[in-house]
Figure 1 (cartoon, helix red, strand yellow):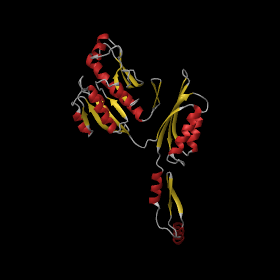
Figure 2 (cartoon, helix red, strand yellow):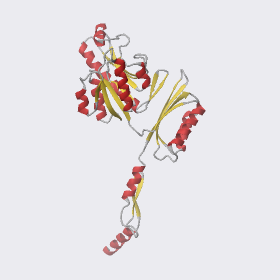
Figure 3 (cartoon, helix red, strand yellow):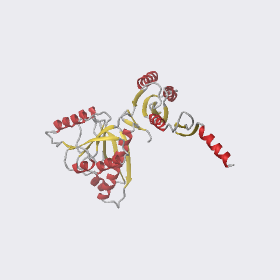
Figure 4 (cartoon, helix red, strand yellow):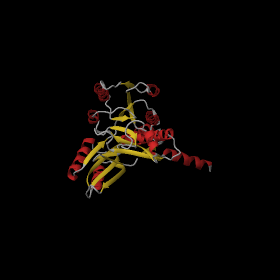
Length: 335
């Protein structure tokens, strides 16, 4: 009996068998004649080559039948898989909006050919489009003054890998927050601004931002009004945060004035900065209830929590290409 078992084991070992698979690549066990080991290195290299590569396609235009099918068939025809797709229609204007997250790691054409196909579909259906291959992380600049709560939140969320970007520089009109930047190893540049030097200093800021190839500017409680020229240099790429009392409490000490009026709600608004002060497309908002038991310091504390969380939400949506701006408002797709 023992002899038979040994003979059976020897025969099995002499055969080349497919033992298991390392998804999505199969690894062959070849222990018969002509081979002696696992072909593990080749399998791992092949597996690495098939790592998903995520592209984001955003389209919008007049609603009509066949839009979803047209883009789905186009991507499939080029060998791309779809991770997720979300669409919406504004019935008041008959405008269609869609965001498609797709995998192009197995694309059997090339990027130029796919882009040409997208342009053809958009021309045929009168659609606008934006395509991001996500090959490089977006480069971000943060502008601050003396309030630090939004800056801390952005840097901590970034350190926790919740914000997919590179923070290239922090710009301020005061030196007060430099120790925070130093703590995170981020360059901190000070441009002191007065009424007489504002235009010159802003030109220097824009020069620095252009030299660093910045994609997004975040006004994290930056207490200076940026010029029309600045907004035109970064269209829909400057995000601002402020309290939501506007226009009822414009100017200084808004929480004190809100407390005097006995408000029942406070809030925060994150929006794209435009030439019209605080009138840009709204990306994110949040509110908190207030009662007669809340003192001014309570309003300030609750307001700061709203401001930093609302700003992070808006920045995250922008970095993930989840926003389409149309008619001075934002369509924000889910995360």
